[in-house]
Image (cartoon, rainbow, N blue to C red):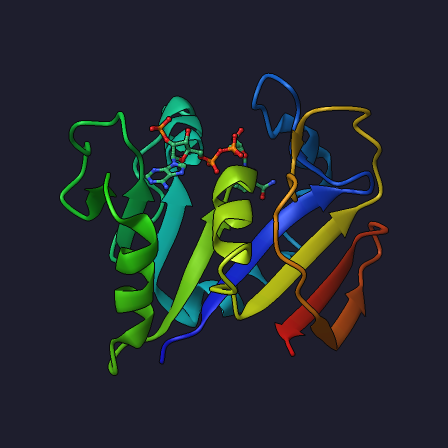
Length: 176
Ligand SMILES: NC(=O)c1ccc[n+]([C@@H]2O[C@H](COP(=O)([O-])OP(=O)(O)OC[C@H]3O[C@@H](n4cnc5c(N)ncnc54)[C@H](OP(=O)(O)O)[C@@H]3O)[C@@H](O)[C@H]2O)c1
């Protein structure tokens, strides 16, 4: 089984984007000195999974596709075709698809990029194996929640905690 790992940035009050979908609030924490474990994590995955809103948000950045060289799967019922050959759209039987993706015996880990709706969908089925939550010391007040309501209870084991000079904290949890 290949583990599905959520690696995501969140505000202190549990939002991953402002209400308009922007992640510009994260810009204040970017620096050449600290990548919050991103490159190490990125090297450990060869497949990305994300929801349609997250895909549209990334396209909205207006830059080249940032995940070249990795396979990306987008869960979406409305997107007809992807803009890059390395991106596939999954419009039906999303949970079956994710189970099959995880059951492949070869390959690196799978990065669950977000967003909240897809996290909630997969949490409800216990399909997320690990969560790396980078919590930044800012209150957004409202926005797009990291964890929208989910019907399932799950228990998690704290594997690692790191703190950064910026005041951010990285918490790594494994499904127990
Ligand atoms: N802070 C961070 O590190 C971070 C990381 C990732 C994302 N984000 C932000 O999070 C926001 C997006 O989060 P979100 O919760 O609004 O949306 P999301 O989880 O990215 O995407 C939701 C979409 O997924 C599709 N979907 C949901 N269930 C499905 C199913 N069963 N089968 C097929 N497709 C399904 C639908 O796409 P269609 O509408 O296309 O049909 C739905 O609208 C963006 O603003 C992004 O910038 C932040």
